[in-house]
Length: 365
Image (cartoon, rainbow, N blue to C red; front, side):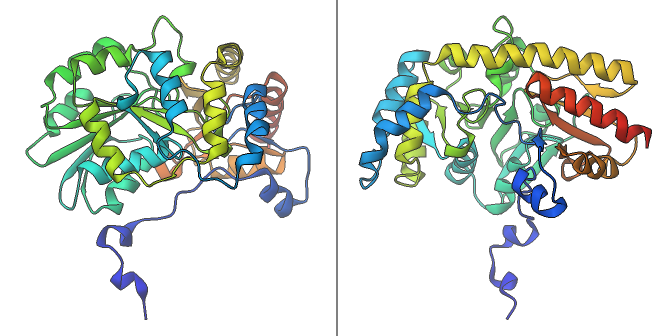
């Protein structure tokens, strides 16, 4: 029996999501230690102390189910951003939310629009529900919003926009997004995926929640995995108008956010000093990466995220493998249609020094 024959039609063409290689896996494969991982856009400062204390306080209650409605976290999001609690939907990481949006608003043969070189979860969730993918060719590695508008038709249900975009780091200004939303029909849902928004400079960061007041078909999705350092706990949130939030919460699985994640998220939501420290390191070290690339004659895509994508003008897989042997894990992105590129997460200064030294050695050999 070949069970693929009875699988959902959209699932038949899917390949599993390829995450960044874990440190433990490389240790097993090559028998080396002192490895640094700059592959998964994780927080180089580790777990914030505020979250650690919240977990300790929660340990005695792990025999209880978590608060299915996430009252305290919704209240924290509400207070921080000036939105109503009934506008908030919680997810097991923002990936969970992206899948939730697709299941809620699109079905078989409906169309979902996203960009070439955009986050790979968009095509994954589109195929999983057997919807029709409308991948719009990228413009300078980023979103072609005019192309998005031209692709909208009566079958369009959902548009995904990552800003900053992963894996390229491209960024759309508030004026660009505002003009775009003004042209999108109200019956088409637009998801603004802001997993990396905390790494943008405050003067250029979108007032997304202000846009939400103007455009009721907008959903804002955010993650606590990156700047807040909670990647291992899997927690994210979305903000939308109350009617959309109600629909999302009808589809959302009960208890999709565990107790430790909820408690940690409440704690870090107000840990502005930690996030500020993370963002400042990213700003300073990004400048070092850009200077390094320029000095080495390497082309890169200017990035507003906590990563930089380098174009080696040749298949990057051998460079990736050679870096592994130097104990440096980065991210190959051939699966995004970018076989000549590697994406490197911005680490601590000493980690970035290791990468610079290793890459120079690899490129000389």
